[in-house]
Image 1 (tube, rainbow, N blue to C red):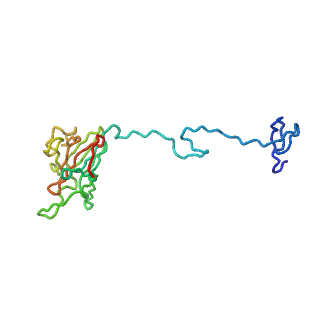
Image 2: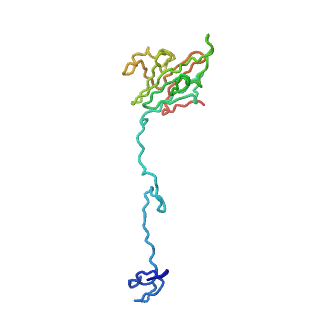
Image 3: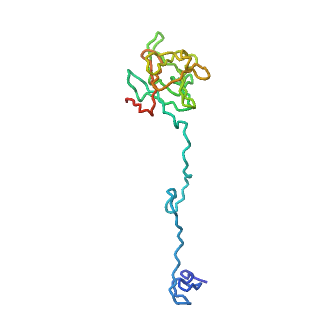
Length: 219
């Protein structure tokens, strides 16, 4: 039986067993010292927590490829008196279909792109009214990153497109040679095209720009 302080070990000199730590070896007379604790060496690969800490974080993985990978980032930016308004803009992600219009909680209409804050009411015989519809148009970017625009049902002809390089706005259905595969009256858009919605003081014009071609806008 041993008491506290009477821990036994092997003699470091002759190897005799059951020698009491802090005493002299019964066989060779050498001082018996306690053996040092074992130390495990760890080679860090840059992801191993220091000091033996255990991390609950999952092992790092390469991010999954984004639908935007390899495609230009496209944005519609408002044109006001020939100047870009950077704060009046919206992006069109690959695979998205966006309803553009005005929010109307009473009718339960909440478009993806709400232009109410940018639109103005126009005096009419029925009072001051918006000239932009609650459901103005749909803008779709397919899985191949091509961009299409189509009038909202019931409002055909109320959204106009001016192809890049021209100042002539045309109704969307009139451009039948640019229709989508489903022949639904949609028009393909390219960078530089402009779209117009509304009338008079309530009119809004947006131009399609690519954020990956050094396009800049004024604040």
